[in-house]
Image (tube, rainbow, N blue to C red; front, side, top):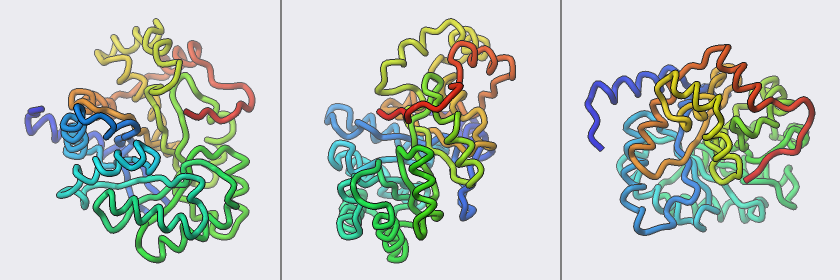
Length: 301
């Protein structure tokens, strides 16, 4: 996809102005690139390569993957993408919960690094909780960090009680990020998890911000309020959903990681960072898709 230099510069400038700061001072963009189900179809391979590389060029420099995605195929794809871009990319991968003990965590990390063609990850996450005690996993993560194989670690799909338990184990407060499902139709984390993490200075990574992989996507995209507000901004409903997910990114420290396997979709995602919703528009969307009034189970795809 050909973009004029001034358009690329404008998008990069918008992304530069909406960055989230991690505990160690590292800044990451409010929108990154997810890669779930990428690398699975050989016929999509070139488009996916071009899409991820375009994203990096535009400033979507955070790329998220996992050993689970295609059983390593996503990591192999990203390895091709970042061959000459590694220094520009904030690279995230995730470990299976059955690899969460110290020995298997080390092996899983090394295998991910090999597939990705790099000597370190910027962030390594436990994909979800399993049977391994958190204290054991934290020790394994800290050992990987000490060895230079990862620069920081975090968790994924942790609810408030999980985070509280994590905070109670030695080294648990070193957790850099919690990656959870979050979109306009799934707002359960707003009741207690967002306040807890804000109080403990733990940023979020919102996966499936466009309701990918769930049953609500069509309902969201065809909702009259979503359509009306998108039309007012001259954007697509998908761009509106993405803009909504990071509407308070700077205050709540939320990074969204939508997947886009087509260059034109990457461009739309990148442009969404400049969209600001009015208070009235937020109220309208709150009426259509209310935040929870009580605790609900953590939504997972």
